[in-house]
Image: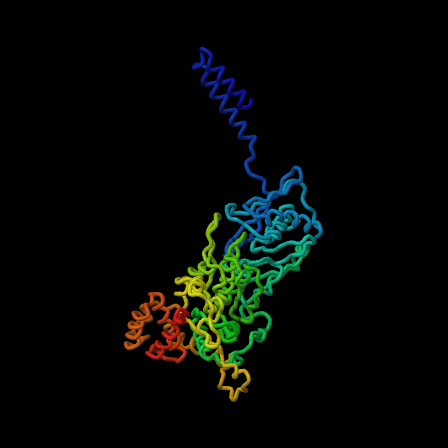
Length: 550
């Protein structure tokens, strides 16, 4: 007796005159029918055609664990992928089925359902191809169910079954190390000398037919190929003539990671000076190396971590805001994040769009770029040293001793205001790059001490940083106002000089702290425990802006 028939019988029975007398019989009939229904329901879901593989997806620069769940059922052939995947994820079923067939495997008949859990996490990319294929093989019985319980599987499949790495592999390696799992991917050389973790390199899908041939190996920070000799193709500061003040300022900026703006007429060497910065920057520390490699991996930008060289990014002034600070769909880091722990050089800075320039104000303050979308908020690191070059006016010859400026005052004001006061206040150093004497180009340098080489300047930078670390006060950029003003780091006369200069130059609170940090860097370069009046006077000399030339 089904439920509908039982309801009709109960209604007719209750409508009868002797309904109360027949109530016990009705209740007994309902109880017997419910017991028969329970017997017909399955006690447990059949999991014989179910499998689960641990994978991961990128969320900003963080890899999030994703469980790839595969269930096979009978029916007409269909392939369903659920779990908020983007277009690349939804298209993976075509790559997976073709790769399975071309690798000697049979695609199971019926309905294939793939769930990417947690379902509310947005997934993107092609890294789920390999875990989906392995999940199908395990659910179909072609591979043992527990084959990859201790593995994190990442890889894109070609139609012929070839496995390729995807963007964000460094993040996946960090997640595998955190979960204490073996990372399965196509190329493990990117982790050599960078991360210590267990890896398994598989380059084709048919390699999984012989599980005994696949042996995981452990990588260490000391492993990998020999470190190549660092080669700088950007020139040497010994080739720069007549710009000793600008070279000195760039050396200080490199030692303390200070933001610097160079202003001068066209052809004075501003771009040449900035392009040689990589030759004097210190090597990346171990933590900085992992962070830099992670950002470049997420952006799918080649980065040789064995050189430990700080990034130097120089985007064109036609770059969009998304290209500078990041964004897009899926969200990727921009040039500011790619310059993390390095230099972001903006040549012809006023030519950048105002919206693009103002979007750098917050990253320069806290070293992080936060991008908010409907799907959530993402953060990208951006501890950068901003180096900019600009002409003083639209024609470029304001204040030049050899050529007259033809710009109107309103044009000059409009041109200089393109950067804006808040962003200008985030520069700790302003350097005027004047036109050098043309006769210097035809003179032969008399001795090697006339012009310091990049190697000599790099040594000064390393000495300053080593002294700061050995003294205990640490990196000047990380010091607070209270620490910078403590008697242990600055003497009384220098502090009084700063007080007078702050009132006369109308310095903001940010400018005062920036001047203190700049003076602390200059003192570190001189290996002085305290900031003296000479150190502070040099720091104040870099507070002159281009508006003083009007």
